[in-house]
Amino acid sequence: MNVLSIETSCDETSISLVQDSEIRNRILSLVTRSQIKEHEAYGGVVPELAARAHLTNIEPIFKQSLQEAKFDLKDIDHIAVTAGPGLIGGVLVGVMLAKTLSMSLDKPMYAINHLEGHALTARLSHDVPYPYLLLLTSGGHCMFVEVLGFRQYRLLGQTLDDAAGECFDKIAKLLNFDFPGGPALEKKAVHGDAYRFAFPKPLEHSLKPNFSFSGLKTAVKQTIEKNPPDDQTACDIAASFQYTIGEIFKERTAKALGCSNHKVERLVMAGGVAANKYLRKELSDFCAQKSIEAVFPPMNLCTDNAAMIGWAAIEAIQNGIKPSGHDFAPKPRWPLEQLSF
Ligand code: KG4
Ligand code: ZN
Image 1 (cartoon, rainbow, N blue to C red):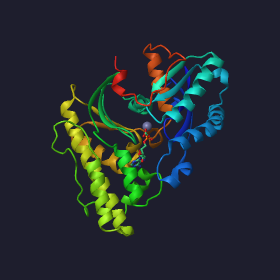
Image 2: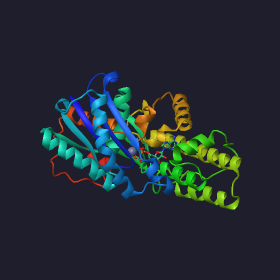
Image 3: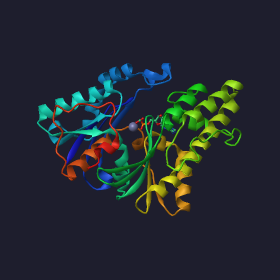
Image 4: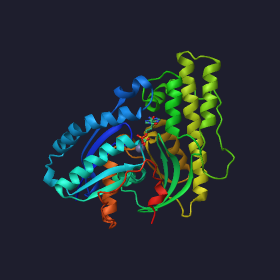
């Protein structure tokens, strides 16, 4: 089963060829182009520019992806595409290509939820068995989900305001770090003193494993505004902020473990923020103390990529899910729990 998959929901244009083989040979090609140049002058993703860049880039990426897999159009068995949630202009570009390929090649198409792609990535990369506890943390989402089986998602908690990735990006921008902010902040934090500034951990005393990052963001902003930082202070603020996120993640994971209906044996971290090495180490040490296995997909599969979309389609096919009709409407908002049977 060879699946050609397309991801265009934010600022990465990505196309992959994925197959349902043993773990080493699953990803036959994965070509991802980030739109850093297009957005860096604005310090954030501009939706219209993102959509236009997807339109420009999608054809060469499609060709490169086929070439790298040494594939011909006739070798494609199924088409998978991110159909939401995300920036709708970008999603439309991917969905149009998917529909065109599906109609012209007469192959079935699967409209995939982007969050489901992140949620199942550790099964693509590590063959993680169900059930597991998922911490999905990206630019638009931050949530704990009990993944009990395919399309059996139980939401345990989520952010009540900003996502963690968004918070990384905004603080990096305030500190005049490079774009994209998350990875830039992580690099600066390596040179900083994580204990210099004590930042708040909103919802610390809540019983539920929810998150809130807006108060933390405001506290960091006020620290920056009070004393415009020199280079070292900027690194110290970055390190103190990242440390606070690590503490919040560990504390909320402990709460999520208490809310789970099953004995958790594995924690999977997914989404762009899961590419942060400091946070991976903190969560991995935390899990080791609790005798829980911590699983992190490789970096290029944490951030947005089409391979995870192809894999989600493979699991859908294996579970007897019917292909999507060509009248499927892309969804800017599409909560993961809505997919549950
Ligand atoms: O999953 P993703 O690629 O796109 C969304 O679905 O949102 O996540 C992007 C987010 C951005 O906010 C980005 O700054 C953050 O993930 N991110 C990081 C790191 N790499 C990406 N945050 C912290 N440290 C990183 N190394
Ligand atoms: Zn994502």
